[in-house]
Image (cartoon, rainbow, N blue to C red; front, top):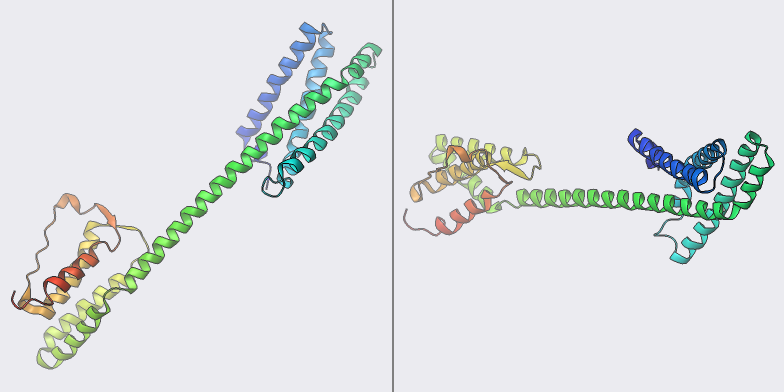
Length: 277
C-alpha cells in the first residue's frame, strides 16, 4: 500500500506545513532561550526537521509490517522502541554531518554533542507520533473497507433474497394458468391466446428485471396488474379488477416485488375458495 500522505497533494502540503511550524518552534527555542546565533538556530531547525520529515515517509513501511493484528502489544512496543532509537541515531548523525560541514565552528560542534541525548528523546517522540498517525490511518482504511464489504455483502444477500422471491413465485399459479390455457385451446382459442400472451408478458417482466432493491409504485402495479389479469381470465366472474392510485404516488419508490405476495394471497384466500363473486 502506498504511503497515504504521498497519495494526495493536500496531505503533502499539510504534512510539510506542520513540520514548518515545528521548525519555527525549534528556531525560537534555540534563538530566544538558548541564545544561539541566528544562522545556527535557523540552520539547526531547518536541517533537523526537514530531514526527519523526509525520513518520516519511510516509517510507513515498518508500521505496515508491524501490524497490530499480528503482533502482541509487548512485541510492538519493543520493536518500535528499537526502531525509534535506530531512526533517531541515523537522523542525528546525518543532520550533524551536514551542519558541521556548513559550520565547522568548534562551538557549534560542542553544542551538537551536548544536545545528543535530548535530540534522541525528540527523535523518539517524533517517531511515536508519526507511527501512531500511520496506525490511525491504517485503522481508518481497514474500517472503511470492512464497511464497504459489509454493504456489498448486504447487497448480495438482498439480491439473493430477491432472486429467491422471483423463483418462488407461486408455482401453482403457473401450472394452473398453463392448464387453463390447455383447456381453453379447445373451447375458447381467442381467450387461450390472450391468456398465453399475458402469461408470457408477466414471466418476461419478472425474469428481465434487474436486481434493483426498489422500483416505482407504477412499475410494481403494472406487474401486479398483469398477474391479476391472468387470474381474472381464469376465474372469469369471481372477482372484479379495479386498481386505483393517485397520480402523485406513481413515482414513489417501494421495495421490489413488495406487492406480488399481497396479490397472490388475495387471490388464494379471497378467490380460490369463493363460491360466488
